[in-house]
Image (cartoon, rainbow, N blue to C red; front, top):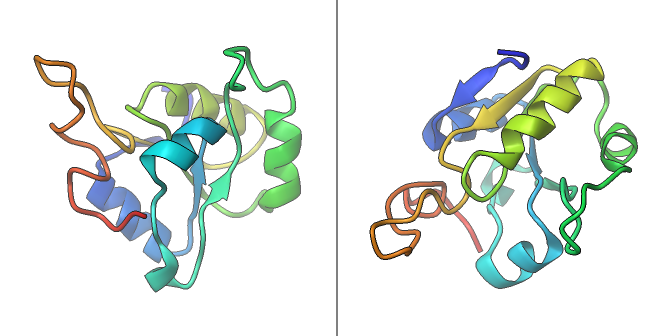
Length: 130
C-alpha cells in the first residue's frame, strides 16, 4: 500500500475529529447534486478538490490545489464516491509528502443489485451530510 491506510467512514469521522483534513475529490456535479459531508460540528469544513474534471479527464492541478489548501504536516482523509478515486488521490498525496488515508466505501458506497447506492458509504452509514 502506497498511502497511510484505509478507513471505514466512522473511522474517517474520528480521524477528522482528531485534526485530519477531509478532502473530497469528487466532481463539482457530485457535490452539487448528491451532497457533501457536513463536518461543521467538528468546527471544520471539507476541502473540495476534484481528482477528475467534469469532462472526465484528470485534474492536472490536483497537487498544486492540495498544497495551496492544506499544509503538508496535516494528515489527510480522502473521500470520493465509492472509494476508488480516493485511493489514487491518496497515493498521489503520499508521493507529495502528505500522510493520506482513503475512506473505504466513499460518500455513497457501492451500488446494490439494482444499481442504487444504498448499501454503505458516508451517507448510508448516517454520518452528517447536506
